[in-house]
Amino acid sequence: MNAFLALVLAAGFAPAPEQKFHIEAKKDEHIDILFGDRKVVRYMNKPRDGSTKDSHELSFKPFLHVYDPVAGETLLTNGAGLASNKANLFPHHRGIFYAFNKVSYGKQSCDVWHGKAGEFVEHKAVLKEQADDKHATLKSQLDWCGKDGKPFANEERTITVRNGKDATQIDFDSVLTTKLEKVRLDGDPQHAGCHFRAAMEVSKHGKTDTYYVRPDGKGKVGETRNWDKVKQQANTINLPWDACSFVVGGKRYTVLRMVSPANPKDWRGSERDYGRFGDYFEWDLTPKTPLHVNYRYWIQAGELTPEHCETLYQSYVSK
Image (cartoon, rainbow, N blue to C red):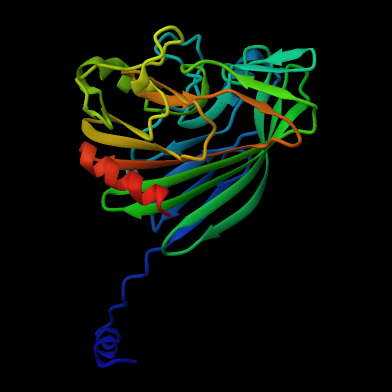
């Protein structure tokens, strides 16, 4: 024991505990990743409840909630809600989520983005938990199910979180497989792929507070870009990164979304002033062609410049 530590203990003071990531679960509700006492993310893994239309709507797909990266007290993401509540704008957009609205296999079709006909994605098991002072990893197994309730695909989804300065880094990694001959995954930029949705309050003032930062610079407040099948705008196709800056609880946060160059091309982007943004692509899922995607999210208190975004992206792709 060194002299300083001996003096501290003799004076009746205990050294501050080392801050580490750790994982806490509330069975059949959610799994939290915390750093010390600060909540970082919350994986919503409630089993799908098909007993009523409303219970199905509230539980038809798992998603990841994100807390503010400083105090860990404010949710920056939208949670589950009912479309019948007119105060909610598109409540099927939840946190960081992954789905397709045009899925077809055999003679069947379904829409796991909206889940209106009984289709759903369900968490089945935790495959891995790991946490230390530098990062935390949560790997889960999910079933993607059609209108008949039977799985047409299986997913292994891995979430890894790390700290930055007043920031949280989240790596989202998914491997989707099937035993069927072919599952066609398709949709459009607004209703397919991996997306981030900001807290519901952003929909109330997004036109006056929300803006995007892109590789070609900072956009105007309220301005959005969306891929169009006819126009085929180059500035919405295969963007390496895109960032959304919005206000929650009177404070500004910026979410940078980075896309792995190995993801299927072409990915086509979508932005909304209420804080839902992401991209989609088309894929034929077969036993020989699993779908592997990877994204990184950087959640920053305050603003990000295009130069800072590019630096973070280069760090991501050079890992």
